[in-house]
Image: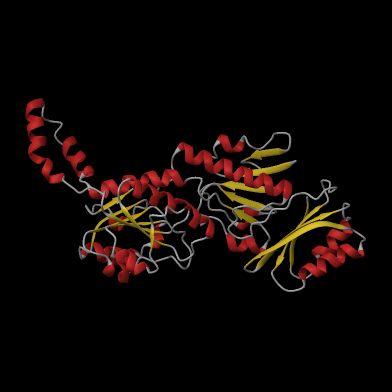
Amino acid sequence: MYTIKTYNQISNRGLSRFPASNYTVSGESTEADAIMLRSHKLSMDEVGGSRAVARAGAGTNNVPVAECTERGVVVFNTPGANANAVKELVLCGLLLASRGIIPGIAFAESQAHLSDHGELSKLMEQEKKRFAGSEIAGKTLGVVGLGAIGSLVAEMAIGLGMKVNGFDPALSVEAAWRLPSKVKRIESLSALVANSDFITLHLPAIDATRGLINDELFDAMRPGTCLVNFARDEIVDADALLRALNDNKLRRYVCDFPRRELMGRDEVIAMPHIGASTQEAEENCAIMAADQLMDFLENGHIRNSVNFPALTLDRAEGAARGTRLAISNRNVPKMLGQILAVLADQNINVLDMINKSREDIAYNLIDLESEPSADSLAAIAAIDNVIKVTLI
């Protein structure tokens, strides 16, 4: 029986994936095999002896990833599960930035005191020119980050008649296959922003991206550029943004992250972090997170981890439950040889195995012909640089 500890409200569509015969799912559990959460700020004390943490969303800023790695705790996210929800809000942001929609609605609402419909209609006709804007068709959209969300945004923009330039120095082969052929890849971020009418950000918040949109890039933007940020607040340097707005270098900033210093500015449209706030996105994220946790706990498989390598291994013929080892260790030489030597000394035959590494961490799945003894497991765990040993 496995125990899943939940934080936040997780969609029942996801929680129902866990069979009641094998899983206990509760927000009250004190010890759990795995943790499932959304926005809860997780501490290592809360992680406890859990083997995995799954965030029902793409970002893992609320999870102590580095500390989890040191303890051999696999951290999962759900990339792409909320991509369509964010894509649709980006479209909304582009339209709000290009047209006088929000001030137009506010003006219309402010005329509620007019009881004569004819007078109201005449006033609307007279004043509508105040809220005129421009169409997005024919304009150039610069997409920064071409992953699951960025590629969908690019495809959508092309369908709306926009020209699309893309920048992503870390573009994976899988992401490249998803990318529409009409997207023009730009090798320099400064060149992309200099040739875009609209710029949309789709990057994670990591050391390399914090403050990425800075004074230099704002200076490189053409007059009248609109910046759309539904990724992460800290990707845009706050001080540089204020300078760009004050100096009229930026026509509009549309974001999902309100800041006190930006409130009340006509050039800023700030939403309350609702990019992934749709029923469908929450369900998709919860389902993906649950499926990944089950596959990890039952088989040792890792898909969509932010700190461990992706790894799967079909069960070897003749390998029964309780004969698969999942071992995490620091990525240093001679580790696999030491592990196999312990098994050989115990006369335990290896049927199949796979080993992969990611930066400083390595992960192994080993199928055995027979169940190893407690002494064998203890001997492997005692090897220097072995972090965690689990019998599945």
